Length: 314
Image (cartoon, rainbow, N blue to C red; front, side, top):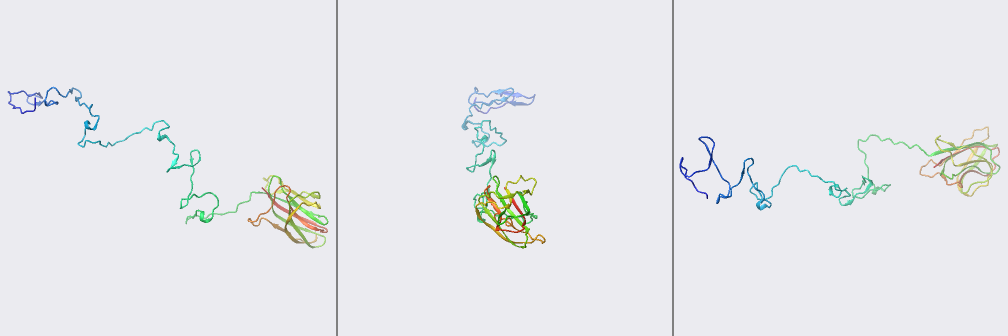
């Protein structure tokens, strides 16, 4: 029936459905359904209680609302996402670019990193002028930095002839001929000796572009400065009979040396091509090039010369 007020007279009148809790207390029964008809009554389950049908809540217009807004509400909590296993998914893709630029790698899986100046210009390897270089400032509390000279590790050799009796009208008396496999660099030579009559003897060092031939000579031993050095490949000759000399490139050094008699003490003279690292030594490339100590066609009577040459092979 429709909504209406019912007069209640204890013990008489219209019956009102209820449920007796005990002999003195009653609970009124309330039916949920269409107020205009008694046929549409909401079912009640003995275990679950009142059943609510949500089958018609597929759109916002019919959605079950939890507040008065009638709009979608945020939900907070922890969400666990699974990226899946397909390589095509974005999360499985390797990063090939940074800010739209292709990443350059030094090796597989290794990204190459560059250094740029304040103008964002890449600083490349190699020596640069000051304007293109990056300044480096040592810390104010930097401890002392020891700077030590580098110990030479180039294979070095010395060959010496003692008491060399030179030929009459002597030309080349001592030569170093280049190597077929190494670059030979003449570093130093030293001369001393004696003669029958004390006096000045002019020594000339020179370079030839073709090797000497014939003549009579010995081959002084090339002594390595380090026992780990390979055997020397340059050829050393000390002449007692003049050779047929090769083509002259030019004279290098001319020295007048006072050569005393055998009874006197003769000072030695020499030349160091390595005293200035900015200056090239005399370089022999191949077996045709020759470094020679020459007497200029002069006879030194009773000559007994001591000559040493130092060279490196690279």
